[in-house]
Image (cartoon, rainbow, N blue to C red):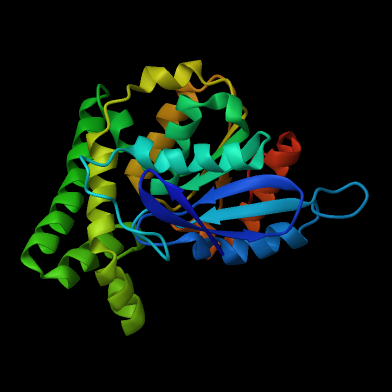
Length: 289
């Protein structure tokens, strides 16, 4: 693991493999290590290695406040662009266009990075991006979904201020993964999420407070894969739908039986979808069944 100084904070970065650079951005509450199973599947998959395959250099930063990275500096409000700066710094260091993959909060960061510097990327993969701000200006049901997710963020913020972390985090975990999921987690996982609650609160503030309009995505011509699960939350599906209708060069793929945490619950299908997209072979299959 290496450390980079970006925007006044130290950011930790894991790497596996060699070859085509693929940057993977994790979800809220997690860290770069969330990609381990998917990375192993991608490096061992049918499109990797060999004379006709592809070798990958998988780059997995810990976003601010997670893993071994430092917390936000506190010098002004944090924006999605501040975590997107990690992608831009990695692209500068790598010295060639990279493939960018983001899940949930990492997907919102990835979209922001692509909008700000599309020339730094070869492709974009958004796995149920938490780009909740894209629901603004939509239908009445879009507004209701936005209010719903904002209330989850408010509970996290209140738990952070009061010090009563666990009920707020239980609501957050069960919202995305189903009732009873928090209680099924090991005590160590509870403790880890408690340590990360400030970063989780910041992530909600950035994804609900962002003002970039949906129309900005219409100018993004990068090949983009939108990846979702068939058993996900309505808000995640709606964000993907709005992006699918707006992005000019997007492909939609679904993972059967998966919910919002599909990189963790279905790492192999997600790896194959990402591999197809990076190698330009995704037209062969539209859905995983």
